[in-house]
Length: 329
Ligand code: PEP
Ligand code: MN
Image 1 (cartoon, rainbow, N blue to C red):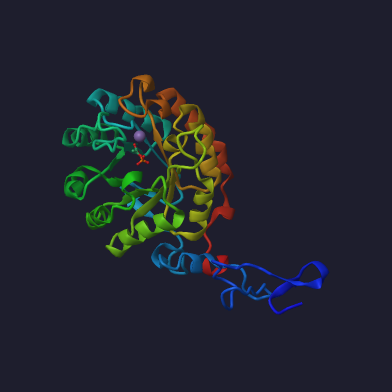
Image 2: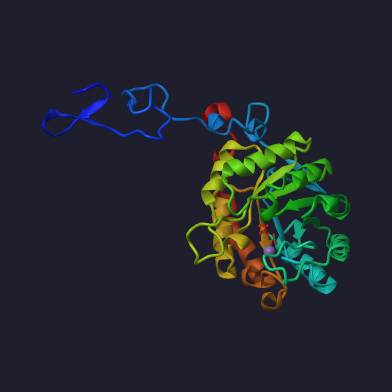
């Protein structure tokens, strides 16, 4: 048998085409198969995500705990953010804030600046919406998370919000990431709908590089060949992020599913995958919502969802406690 070949019919060597291979190739056209017992076949997570070292767990940094009003995200308490997709009216927002608080939410969500796929859809109330959110905070005691879409709006949104949301469509808007980072507000970084985990970690690294370590990573579903649901909930990404990153991980079952019937099950799956919290769309009358009604829960359904995650939260024990990257390998 010839060097670098394998035996073919009648003992003639067969060349293996290795065009395009990089690893394991000594020179183009020849393949070195790993020897049995070869010391390094598996690439460690640290090597794999070496470009974004600051977001990875280390001996110094096992878990980032982010203070927000009188509680923390990423600590012992599982945190739920809930509210309408869009801020519509004062009455809608206050009613929802009081109801989701009673069900156990800590943070009110609601878009004042809306990134809509259609230019003719409701684009949000802007500054007026932010004022309504601030009023709802006073009435309910909930913290506020809301999206900022443009770097020019960062000072305005940061004046009203406790947490700045960077939406899926803006995950790689680097000037927005830098401006949001410099506002000093905690940031909820939503995964781009076509972004890999490495892409999301790169965006998080940019925020950290700009002096802000208070970043929450949000899995909100990605586009795949599956069209039955709005997106595909990448639960593997949640488990992976919890394994490798010290940043809190928040799951968004609403945008993942696109359908309210699936939201409670995805919420329970997120808890089992060890997410630190949820962001869920809730509306007093979802069929009349100005945006994302199909995926919004009404108040009773949200209350039932919160009750349904409790047994799963109770199962989370010491097995979930973070381990340093050095031990993960
Ligand atoms: C939203 O939270 O309403 C939203 C627009 O989310 P995403 O950026 O994940 O689509
Ligand atoms: Mn929405």
